[in-house]
Image 1 (cartoon, rainbow, N blue to C red):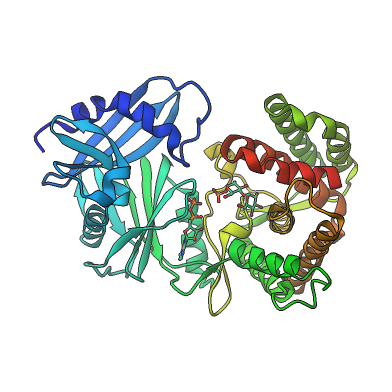
Image 2 (cartoon, rainbow, N blue to C red):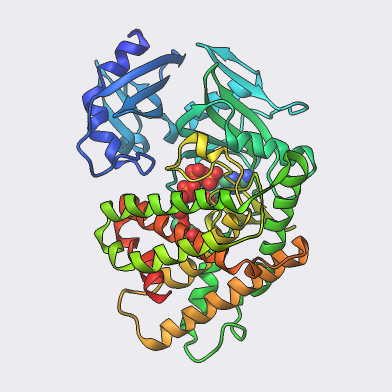
Length: 444
Ligand SMILES: Nc1ncnc2c1ncn2[C@@H]1O[C@H](COP(=O)(O)OP(=O)(O)O)[C@@H](O)[C@H]1O
Ligand SMILES: O=P(O)(O)O[C@H]1O[C@H](CO)[C@@H](O[C@H]2O[C@H](CO)[C@@H](O)[C@H](O)[C@H]2O)[C@H](O)[C@H]1O
């Protein structure tokens, strides 16, 4: 490929404007797109297929692109084509196993190319020549699995170093945590972090899939209770509570914890009100819950006890936990996708993670129900949610020594704040699902 990389990506700007809104990781869906500005572009391999690395800016948001260029893309890549570059086709290279294999080669040799550094973690030696395949699920980022060995997450919205996901994995791995996957390599330049490879947990099942399988079981057996059907999840919820408490204890031990006075909680209350203002302006259906939400947030102002804060997961839900043969593992310590990097880096109450997971049990229970489901199914879903939420808290308490439910006012406020966040998240990403957090607020 002879064209200069910057020029090549610039000439694709119009095609990118049409292609970006269809990508799950693209944040500004549903709004009129501004100009696509090319911040930087380098050629990682120059043959056919060629691989271009680019960072673009769309309306002040930065995105990472990996663009493959082929004269004649095979049939299985046809759906990934972005546009034409001269006589060649430009396409989403993350879907091309051959080009992703080149990324693994660059990682394995610790390459330094076009200002981008591929660095393995101390004592890690990577195996190459593995089959590369993108994982099927559409997420905030794009992940590539290499054989049964590694998973590389390409951050679609690369942020400045240090990257929270990388740093918290490293910190937990250093203290021998069994609840995270081993960090393997990082792709970054002097400013931004582009990718993070970890050990691939090939035997793992996703928390969301296993939890919703249990709910499905229960809904199919209309006359049985949650503890009586084959797929009862309460034991798993208990173990998950233990795992989360252990991660909190390890993060506190290695990165520290502090007690903050009740005045600092007042700041958190203002932030929750601020989020509610912003989300209500975007999703008017939230307005009917405003008095209830504001009252619950304001209850926090009356708390008189100091509260511990520390590094936490920051966006914990059933999609962020994997069940391996040996226990639960937490993944994706990036924090909430929409939050500013400075806010994600802050120490926070571990009850935030507990609240996230409690919301998730509720999500799993009700996501399978339609908008007008009958009383029987709604009762069963409520039962599943109550049973697993309780089990999770009991598991957490068995490790932490204190039951999160004892902090009822704070926990309720954090859960409601998370539901407000979810309303905004679903509104932007999966409009059909806005009903899930809204129905939860209606039941509160
Ligand atoms: N270490 C791992 N082993 C096996 N699968 C993993 C691992 N890390 C992530 N995954 C899978 O990749 C998916 C996306 O990972 P995640 O870090 O949550 O990315 P995103 O930020 O895009 O949500 C997860 O839902 C899980 O299925
Ligand atoms: O996994 P991400 O960091 O991208 O998290 C975002 O997307 C999640 C959905 O994929 C979203 O989670 C919400 O839906 C989940 C089911 O799909 C459910 O388990 C969560 O409880 C619910 O919040 C998450 O909020 C968002 O940040």
